Every structure is written in structure tokens, then in C-alpha cells.
Length: 298
Image (cartoon, rainbow, N blue to C red; front, side):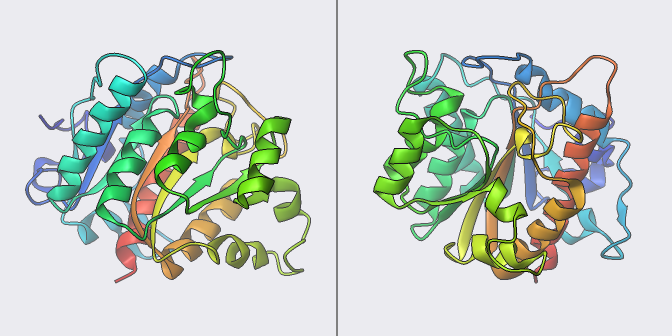
């Protein structure tokens, strides 16, 4: 079942939001089971969809209305994965796999970061050469957290079990176990202090190519909202100082879309704060920007 305006993404009219014509499908997944600090990610998808109705459809940077490049953007009714942990992950995988099989570019909106396991697995099965790029404050490589292997803190450890081609950027919080795992497995992890400290070159965009370099042609992108600095994105369960701003993020995403093929992506871990509307608006605009970058590639 698809959502109709004004409840769908961008409040697009029906001629631009039908499932058959649209090349992009937005899949809300309000799943929350393992959050360990601030709660509320289950409300994230609805908040982003509501805010998206206020996003201008014209993009001044590209002089385009991005939704026209895609044939439309369909928004599905929020998915209930059923069960917890492994059951939910498998349900998400099957759902996303079906949409990919219909040649849709799938955008998952979480919900907690655990949803990314199923989505990344579905894309990994479709694209054998796939890299998974994680933009996040946390490396999420714990084997288990609070007794749960499917915790939001273990997302990339689970992804690593079926896809070794992972790249992490923006990391600025982890435990010793994760740091050791990164060194032992030679994971391409780019820490925030290095990206911001000109380790990869004096040019402020030099870090773009450093992060993009290890990626294969096809990329699945997972974005945890705490990748951003809390000043821009306070509505997260585990905020970390020293994050990224709007312009430096979208300039990186534009470069990424020019150099690699983003085949799908997700946005996770938005925990709406009552009375504060800018976090969900930022994420809605980011999704629209990223869709535009992907389909402007040609």
C-alpha cells in the first residue's frame, strides 16, 4: 500500500508518487528494540515524512526539480517487520529484496540502525561487488551489546559477516574491542579527527577522495543521524560532539554520487524532540538532495 498526499514523501501529487512509474521507493521502518540511551527512533519516519511536505521541490544548486528525474517517488505504508532482532532483520531483507527486484531504488527511513542490516544484505545479494559505506559517529562493530548481537551497536559487525567491503567515515566514538577489530581486519575506517584535521591533504575536499577511494563501483549508503554534529542534529539517542555540518556533508555526497553508483541508502536513528522541528526537516531535505544527486549522475 502506498501513501497518498499529503502523507507521502514531499507530499507529491498522485501522478508523481505512484508505485508503478516511480523509480524511487521510500520505505518507512519505525522499528525500535535495542536503543540504549535516548529513545524515540520509532517516531523518526513519520516525523521525516511530515517535515518533507515543507521541502521545496526546486533545488537551486542543480537548477532542477529532482523528483522529475526519477519518474516520481513512491512512499510505502510504514513496515512492521514483526518479531525482534533476527526475525525483523530477515523480514526487512525480504521486503527490500522484492523492491530491488522491481528495479526500484529503495530509501529506508528508520527507526534504529538495526534496520540497515536487512537492507544492506538485500543489496549485497543483488550486487556481488557492493561496498557498504557507513556515515556515523560510532563504529558499531561490537560483537554484542547488552547481550544482543543485533543491537544498534553491532550493526556493522553483522554486515561484515556477509560483506567485507565496508568503509566507515565520521567515527568518533568506539570501545577498545572495536578499535582492535578494525586493525585486525584492516577495515577502512576514517575517523572524524583525521577528516577534519587535514590528514588527507590541505584542500578541504581532499578527504572526499580518501573515503571514496576504497569503495567499489556500486555502493549501499547507511547514514546514522549522529554523523552530524549535535548543533545541527540534536535529535539522536547517542549524540557525539565533533560531527559534521550540512554543507560539508552534502558536498561529500555529491562527490560520492559523481564517482560511484549509489544503489540504495537508509537514514536511521532520528529521535524527534517535541517542539523542535529542524532535525526532521534537515533529514527530509538530505534524502531529497541525495535522490537528486543519484539520478543526476546520468
